[in-house]
Length: 142
Image 1 (tube, one colour):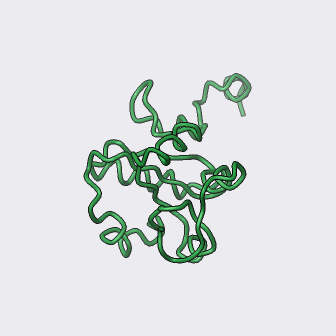
Image 2 (cartoon, helix red, strand yellow; image 1 turned 30 degrees about the horizontal axis):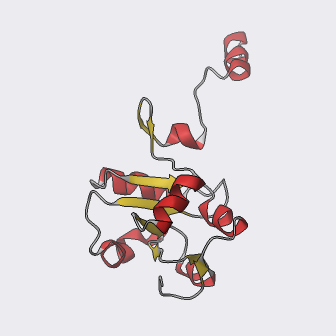
C-alpha cells in the first residue's frame, strides 16, 4: 500500500461507507429515518412499515401492523405486500442488526421502482423492541 493509500485510509478520503451515506439518493437527502420520526409516523398512521426479514423471523415478532416483504424473496411476496400502497405513501423498511442490509436493499429497490417516499429504519426491529414499542407475533400484521 502506497503512502497516498495509507493517508486516504487514515483521513477517510476514500469515501463514506456509513449506512446514511449508502442510502444517500442525492446530496443532502437520505433514505434513513430516525426512531423518533418513525415512531411519530407509526402513531399517526402516516406510514406503512415493511419487515424485510424472512417469514420465519417476521412470525417470531414484528412491528405491529408491519407487512412482511422479505428482500431475499421479494418477487414472491411483492404483489401481496405492496397491494393498496400508493406510490407516494411513506414506507419504512426495517430488519434487525446494524449489519443487516436487507432493509437498505429493499428501500433502494422500492425507491427505484417509483416509491419516492421510502425510508429505512436502521436496526429497526432491535430499536423498536428496546424502546418497548408495539409489536406482534404471528403471520398477520395486526
